[in-house]
Length: 288
Image (cartoon, rainbow, N blue to C red):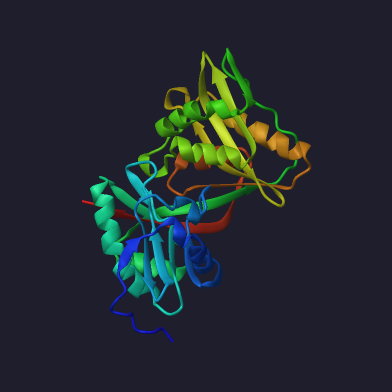
């Protein structure tokens, strides 16, 4: 049974000293939403807004959605203890979160709810359904034949010093909702199982970052600079990833994309990917 919300509960900024209690909240409680991200929820401590509800020395709930990049804030964490209902915790944390985000001139808040209880809360808070993220997979059958790259361009392994230029490609290739900051790109590279770039004429024009799982790779990021799209660069990168999978005798390559991203879906279909049937809603909230 959910207890009544204590009148003394009010939001405050999470601090570093909350880390262990927040870890317990994430580990032991049922109502926990974590954003699918390269950063863990506790990695966002020190960034605003990151709020908690505390009573009697116990963390009852937490809500974190620091913007990254500056215009967009994904809900990185929302978690509540059993002694307070998720809707009650949200009603206390969300108004202060909105104020903090408006002060930072953030345009949109977004979330990918993986559980129905969180989706219900977001809908009740006037989040709207934007589109779905869908999952595709590819299983090796034969060695792919990579397409020829444009003259003067090469495909090579990604290096840490490439990150600022990769972030620039990412920023140019994606709408603000899906852009990654240089810091996020750096975290992605740290966790990469296989990462490559296409370079030519003194600049990086395309890249892919894949993370390793128990059975193969997950293509976490694929981007081509807009002025080089349509030249087969993404296809070349993907063929290289597929060849890498085959060379390691792994059995699966997965990728996520938006169900309204027709060019992306067409590319993956051309490369032999198939929709798995898994999909997750993307909900958005516009800040005035």
